[in-house]
Length: 310
Image (cartoon, rainbow, N blue to C red):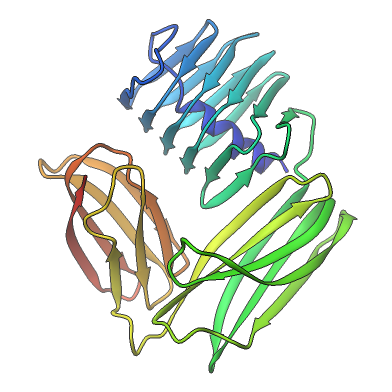
């Protein structure tokens, strides 16, 4: 359950301002290898933070509009609070708790943390440092078996869990619910779930995700996971290209596991990510222009592609 806070809180981090007490709405600062201290109430919008440490000091409130935090650490001091107003993305972030804190998300806010999307319910919601996450997911796997797709997932704990909507898409834009699997409500032991899609669309790539729903309406999205037909899909795929700023770049491999490095044309490394799965999404919020994406699969294949961000 603390894992969610690490993630959830990290969102906040990237909205920090280095040695600045407030950044006006619309400013999109970039920080790399920076120590950031926020000592006064602060409003931040559109920050891009890489390999940095952020400390939110005692009784300070940070209002975050949008942002990205990658490979960084967030330190919450006693009485610190964060209010999230818009879309945020966080990848590979460590969290240190130095006291009681709270985090609030406004109604309808979507927060993406290591591929999991949290959607705030009607009226918004707040979490305190002593709270537990409603559902802690241990894994979510999708496997192509002949012409069907088997989905398997498990929870370590459940609180107020109504269940899981299983959703499918062929473009990651239009999603259809193909099943609803009831949850246990409340549980402190491991529970395993599964569902088999017997009507897989005739497409080279099909996406699946879980939309976990609480009884109070709060939702968390896990995935998407991609299932590929190796006869129709190349070993490594990078798409779309060109791509609009802020959209997610898709990387797909036919063999499990790969590493991605993102450079600009001068050779500056913006990020290095890895996964044991066959699919990864990378929010392209590092600026506009030409980027070099290098993908190395665990089976030894390498693909390098120039990606244009508009």
